Length: 309
Image 1 (cartoon, rainbow, N blue to C red):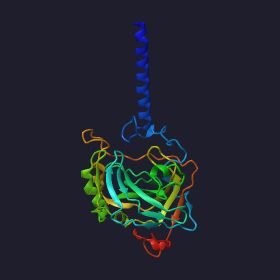
Image 2: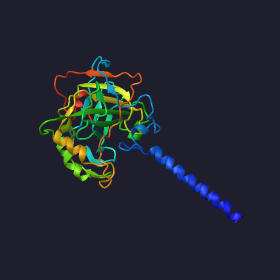
Image 3: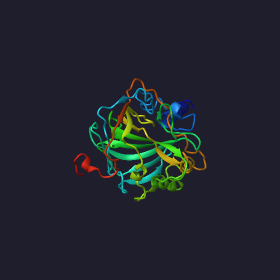
Image 4: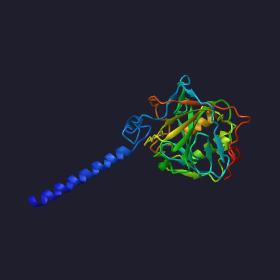
C-alpha cells in the first residue's frame, strides 16, 4: 500500500496545482462590467490598468492648454459604404468592424491612422454612461473610433506609445425622432445580435459618414491616455470632440435595452459598460479650435494634402 500511496498523492498534488494555476490565469484575464467579482474595481492587476496614464478622464476646461496654431483633422473615405463590414455583440460592447481604408491625418500625426473598429459605451435608459466627462458633465453615450498608426494591427499598435488614435464622440439624448440614418440603421440590427458572439454582416447597409455628418470636428480636446478596457494599454492619443452628437430618447432606449453581456437566459443586460474616471496624474490636456472656410466632408479628401491613393 505504501508504494502505491506516494504516486497517488503526487498525482493528486499535481492535479490540484494545475487546477489552481488554470484558475489564476482565468482570474487574471477575466473581466466584466456588471459583477463585483470581475468589475472595473478588480482590473488593476490586468495589463497596465494600474498605470499613470489611464483613461477615461474628466476634462476641466479651465485648465486645458490651447493649441497654437489649431490643428484640423482630415478625414478620408468615411462615407464609403463598403468600409463597414460587420456588427457584433462582443459581450462587452456593440462593435463595428471596418475594412482599413478610412483614415485620418493631421499635421501632428507621424503617419496616417487607419480606422479598424468602432464601439459604444452607455449607461441605462435613465442613467448616462459616456466614459469621458467635460467639467463633470457625463453624456448619455460615447462612441469610440479606433485607429492604428500606419494600418498596424490593434495588438501591435498597443505596444507603441502613439500606436493608436481613438476619436471619442459624446452623444446626448434629445426629444423627437432621429434624422440621422446611421442611428436608425444600427438600432434596427440590434435585434439580430442580442447575445455575446452574435454578429451580422453589414453588406453596405451602414454609412459611418451619415452618422457623423452633423458632427463638429473642429473643436476637440486631446491627451495621452490608454485603452479603457483591459489590458488598458497606455498607447492612445485621445481626441475627444467638444460638441456631442444627438440621439432620440426612443433610439437610446433601444441601444440600452436590446443587448446582453452573455445570453438572454442569463439576463445580464448590456448596461453601464463604461469605466470609471481615472486620475490625470499631471498630464496635460490640450484644446484645438479650428474655423474652416467650409464644413468638413467625411469623404475622400485627397485634395487636402495633395496625395492620391
